[in-house]
Length: 231
Image 1 (cartoon, rainbow, N blue to C red):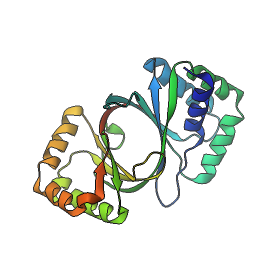
Image 2 (spheres, rainbow, N blue to C red; image 1 turned 30 degrees about the vertical axis):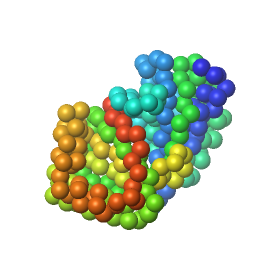
Image 3 (cartoon, one colour; image 1 turned 60 degrees about the vertical axis):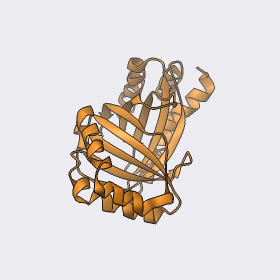
Image 4 (cartoon, rainbow, N blue to C red; image 1 turned 30 degrees about the horizontal axis):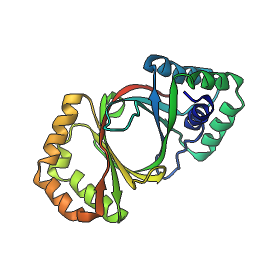
């Protein structure tokens, strides 16, 4: 791996997440990992090293099906406000131990794919029990119209039958998509049963008619929840 670029990317993973008071904001970091076990250990070491003060919630996700994208893992950091985001960034930057761990991580991973997302709406509630997710990147020419139509779908009879959670995010930075939809489920089978039900329904047909050419769907993926570190 290229040591300098990887170290900067992993540092961005740890330093660049914020959450506004009015909406949940996530920094999504896509990584290509050579050794998954040691990589999870790197994330855990950073978490443990910074235990003497504020820490964000960190979630590690392993990609199962991702099309042509070589990304193998995603790391998500979540802060409750901008002030603690800045405080976390300063702490990591000033910590020799954290910097040494980042350097070790650059030998086994490359984390260059980043996006900043704002949560706009969510339906259902799996919480920390979710085990699998499906992600749908979307480009919408009219964000308000798309969000309204998707909300109508999720509050329809079919949408309310989904056993897991569904979250609509607006992309604030990173990539070319305007939105991202995440479907969280307690199992791989339950996830795909929910998707089968949703996509074959009349309610979904109504949604497609409503958004029309306003929606362009990107490469879809499914991933497995590895671990969440919660303060």
